[in-house]
Length: 154
Image 1 (cartoon, rainbow, N blue to C red):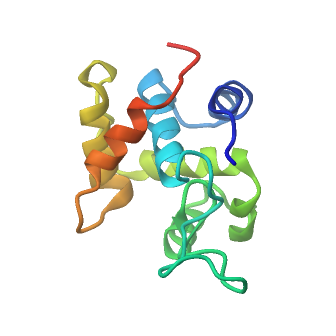
Image 2: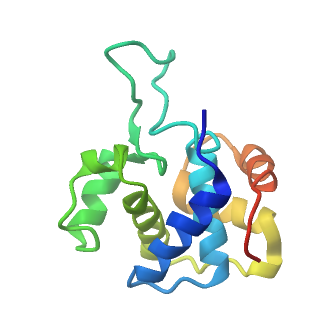
């Protein structure tokens, strides 16, 4: 089961970004939407899967929420004040908080957002450098996921 992306885009993603205090050009909307879609297994997971798969008493891996934010990243962002009144555990159920936290994570990085016209490949590289920060290049997965998103608005 997963969330309907069109409902998510119009009912959560765009409204949450309109309310946030950081700038949200269309490229930021696309980047956050693609990130959340990718990190949540196409809006099917409320956190990272644990290594070895889900078992009864360990449903989550190290990242929580559809944004798959790990506790050290959350604590770092919270220390900077952008999400200071919220609790880490809320990421498991608060979709709006995931949108805001994901955008805030990108906002905190000094690397400028790619241009919208540079396309999915540029956003995948930006995601990999800023958000994923992993040793394994997962850009092909990000790109495949991003191409599958049924965007409503341009």
